[in-house]
Amino acid sequence: MKLSWLQIVRLGLVQMSLGAIVVLMTSTLNRLMVVELALPAILPGLLVALHYGVQITRPNWGFRSDTSGNRTMWIIGGMVVLALGGVLATYGVLLLETQFALGLTASILAYILIGLGVGASGTSLLAFLATATAPHRRAAAATITWLMMIAGIAITAGTVGALLDPYTPQLLLEIVSIVAALAVALTTLAVWGIERRIQAEPTREDTLFWHGLKEVWAERNARNFTIFVFLSMTAYFMQELILEPYAGLVFNYTPGQSTSMSGAQNGGTFLGMVLVGIAATGFKFGSLRQWVIFGCLGSAATLTIISLIGPLGPGAPLLPAVIALGFFNGVFAVAAIGSMMDLAGDGREAREGTRMGLWGAAQAIAAGFGVTAGAAAVDVMRHVVPTDAQAFGSVFLFEALLFVASAALAARIMKSRRLETAALVPGE
Image 1: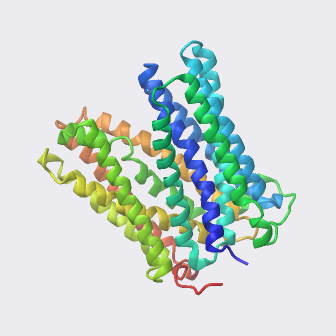
Image 2 (image 1 turned 30 degrees about the vertical axis):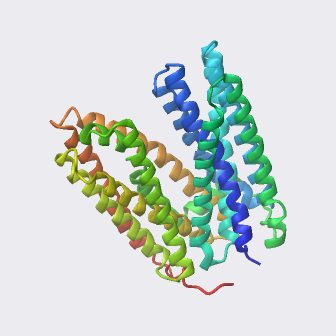
Image 3 (image 1 turned 45 degrees about the horizontal axis):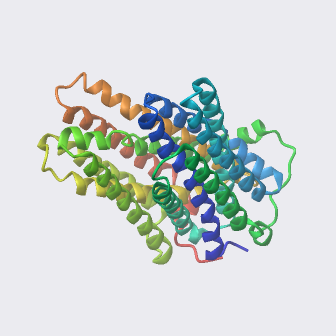
């Protein structure tokens, strides 16, 4: 048996729960540290980078879910660790105001727990989706689960923002504790019993983790796809911290306008994700490989446009270009996740989680590296070239080149019949 649509949506609730907790750590607590506590912005930046860095452990969590005989345990257990990390991170921020050293220690430990929880729960969930979703439903499954994660982020941010006014430290701790408890409860209800009904338990083995990882790395497809994930996700995240400053410095956008622009970009991402899910699954149009290449090349083209209109200054059509960038990013992201699900089953059996973990680690490292590299590159270029438009534009052009290289790599490594027909195979 394979996952039904209802079961896919149920598993999407886990992604929603992950997003709900993580957004509080990366946005609300970030703002409190920089604004209310007047701490250097580098502090929350390093803590967020720490949680990405810890996710290098994803292959280990995937391997354990492969060999333990119970992915459900790792999904729920990881969510519990993530919830505990979220509550501890909140408590750490409250301590920073009066006991800085203790608060910093608590925050470091909390963000390590957050990284471990995301890695264990998220990797095991994706491995389960990869093994239990029929091939012709994988694009739609990727769309559903990622849109539900975005929904979790949006709903949590909006609800917590409304409940947190007027702000008090005690109220913040209460709200985060409730969100964390709800996330654990929702995850448990969402996954309970599905694994038992869908498929046989994963094979139990006594193989050591490093031996299992070596087996996967020896597979050419897994190794090449890891390189693709790192390259494309570096390109994907490079604009994360520089697009809004670009809008303000070069196009005179106000803070409100640049925030609205980011919202419009996310709207474009939403449309791109929906398009791939409907086209590939509903209308059997295009393979995952073709959608990945389309998303990469479209992202490269829009980044080039964003760079070239810089010299035009205020009044240039930045907003439509940013919406288009979001659209093509959404196409690429869902097609890439669908491809991960499809490729996870290629090669030695009972290693789906290890492969997903390897690619998840590459994605997490690329996210941290891309965000940092994009911001650092702009800082350097602003001292090298005469105008801000040229400084930002050169970084966007480099990002576009990375997307072109990613498209070329995807065209070369995604040639197996399995991927070419993933969106066209009749239901099982």
